[in-house]
Length: 316
Image (cartoon, rainbow, N blue to C red; front, side, top):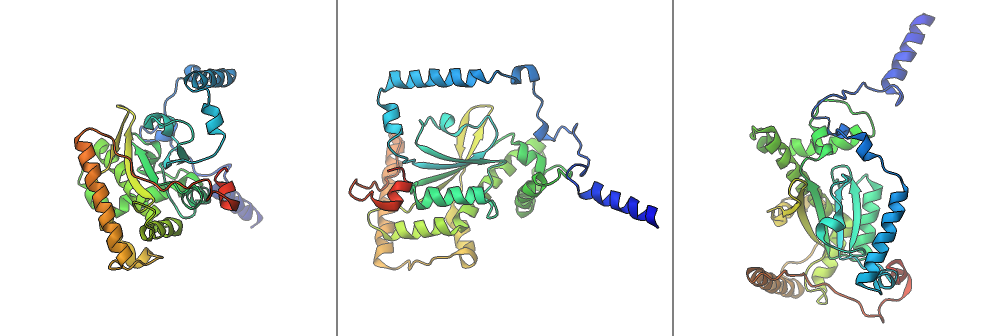
C-alpha cells in the first residue's frame, strides 16, 4: 500500500510540476517557437548596445540639435501599437516613426485578452490618459505563436494557456480556414483573422467604448476616437498591409451583448458627428487619389488646459 502511494505521488508530481511537466516535441517543423538560429551569429557582446546607442544619439543631434529636448518635454504619442513580440516587427522602424510617436504593447501573437493585466493597463493608460487617436493591432505572417497554436501538442503553462486564445480564433472561423487547402495560405489567413478578433476585443473594452462615446458627442473632436486599425506585416517584403474589414458589421452584431455605453443615433450631436465624419472621409479619399497621405485630425489641448494630475501623467 505504501509503495502504491509513493508511485501515485510521483506520478502526480510528474504530471503537474513545471520541472517535469509534459514532454514537448522539439523537432516538429511546425514548432515555430524553436526557430533555427546560428548561435555564433546570434551572440553579441553587450557593449555593442551602448556603442550603438551613442551612435544613435550623435545621428539624432546631427539631424536636430533640439531632438532630445523635445523628447524629454512630454509624452504625446499618436498611436497605440499592439504587436507581436517577434524581433522582426519593430513598431517605430517599420512605420517610419520616430521616438515619442508610438506607445507600444507587445506579446506573443499580438493578443488582446481581458485577463492580461499588462495589456489592459497599457490600453487604459493610452486611451484614457494619453488620448491616442489611433490603435493599430499588427500581426505578421510566419508568426511563431500562431503556428504553435496549430500544433496538437501541450506546450505547458503558461504558454499553453496563451495559445488557447488563438485556437479559439480558429474555432470561430473553422469553416473558412478548413476550406483553405494550402497549409501556408491557411496560416496566413489565421494570422489575419486573429488580428481582426483582437481588434474586436478592443471594441469590447470599457475604456475604448467610453472614449469613443465621449469623442462622438464632443464637437471638439473631428472624428470618433480612438480609431482601430487591423494591419498585417510581411517580414519577407517589409510591407504593412491594412486588412479590408468593416468593423461596423461586427459591432452591429455584438452590441447587445458587449455595449457598456449607449448613444442615441438620432440625437442632434450624433447626426452632426456623422456628417462631419462623412466629410472627412470624402476629403481623405480625394487626398489619396491625389497621392497625398491623409492624417486623421485630433484634438490638441492648449497649455492652459494641461494642468493637474492628468496632465502630470501625460508628461507635463
